[in-house]
Length: 167
Image 1 (cartoon, rainbow, N blue to C red):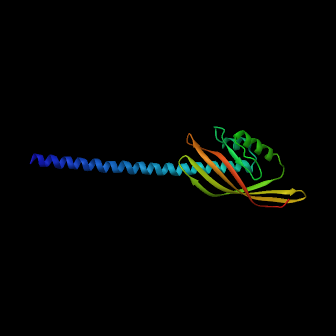
Image 2 (tube, rainbow, N blue to C red):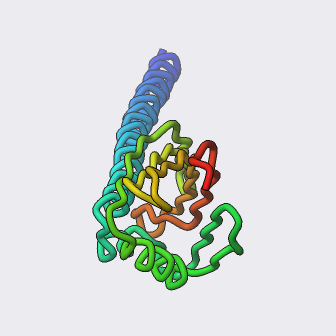
Image 3 (cartoon, rainbow, N blue to C red):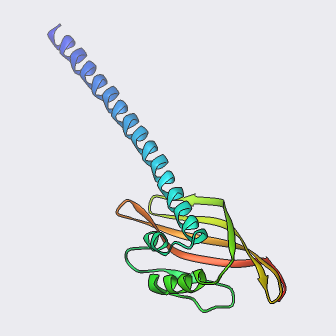
């Protein structure tokens, strides 16, 4: 009889361990889900900060969205690739000095992983006057981001002109 009771106690103990293990795995899964949501929010926040920095010609904020490692690829239509944050900033500082342009942006799609992500955006660039007439350029700009020390940073900017005023 004692052996029968001890087998029951062992079986009951194993059941309790099994159920508590499932509870721990469920709590870990819920924790990962919160982390995934936070990860997506941080990603989108960085993209919006970057787009607003461009729109507002804010070089300091723009630079804060760049990889602290200094790696960056800027791919523009009819231009050679720029391979550094310094080169990216130089391009943008020169562009920011051009007067009277405006830009409207929107995020078209995102694909956010644990360490890398991609955002595709639309840019509507306008100048009230270029060569005696209004000018516009609609571009699709794709950004690649890398997460470094739990922060997202831009590591690639690839722009394609879709439709623009003829010169």
